[in-house]
Length: 148
Image (tube, rainbow, N blue to C red):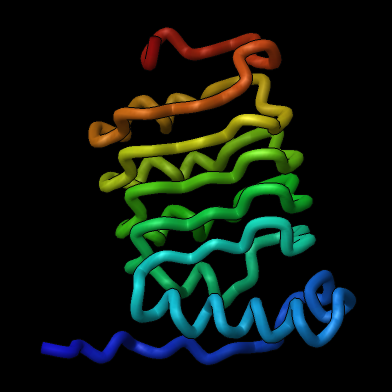
């Protein structure tokens, strides 16, 4: 049977998307709309500098792809997205991960390659479902012994 997903009210597309023109705006809005039904959202190469608030409200998402954007941080609210099984934020400018990521108990895949992360936080060690962690080890200087 068909289950109606709770709808997310759009505030406005981020400035980075508006600046790219009508096609980018339509792509963004369509992505959000369909993600409410498919539980998958791909915002690759949208020029995002932060995760839009309406994305963070999609707490039942199973897959979120934010590759090739301009993200320098993940907000603490990422920890509210407890349905996530796959999170990919490759080729951004992330330096640290929020401790709230410890709440992502269903996360099985975390792809962080192509970022500026120098320390793997202890919070990652508490993700018991995590089977794949991809990151550039050249930058990592302090993996905590708790997760090695």
